[in-house]
Image 1 (cartoon, helix red, strand yellow):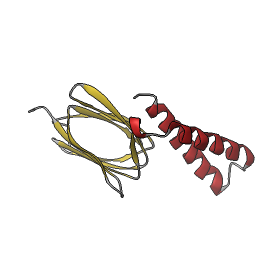
Image 2 (cartoon, rainbow, N blue to C red; image 1 turned 30 degrees about the horizontal axis):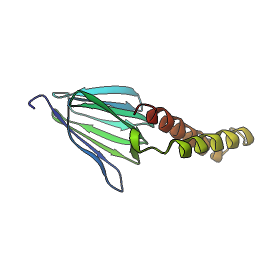
Image 3 (cartoon, rainbow, N blue to C red; image 1 turned 30 degrees about the vertical axis):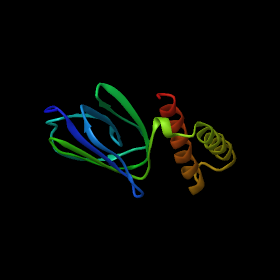
Image 4 (cartoon, rainbow, N blue to C red; image 1 turned 90 degrees about the vertical axis):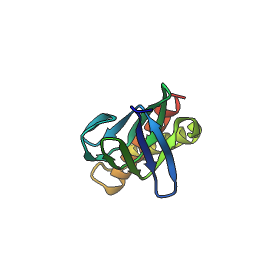
Length: 135
């Protein structure tokens, strides 16, 4: 289709997605942003959150970790630590991770290194649960 945009979602382990999409929404570190074909070129950091795109008039959702997005007029490349499609997320595992992070956060000092690690783990777990519910 002439209005399609090529999207690649790449993790260190695999190509999580590669194909044409109508649009993509990315959780940037400065806020969520959308991309359509013809977008100005940009490079952005990506935050933990929900990435989604429309393909064949259907939304597809991914839970993503931190990384980078490169946008050109007809292609978006996402280089990301992890990416899980909504229908591939183990919700029970994500809930256990959330509970574990909440328990540990309640027991450690806010100024410790471990507190920040647990805060990030909690954010990832909450995102995974939220995205899994969008199947």
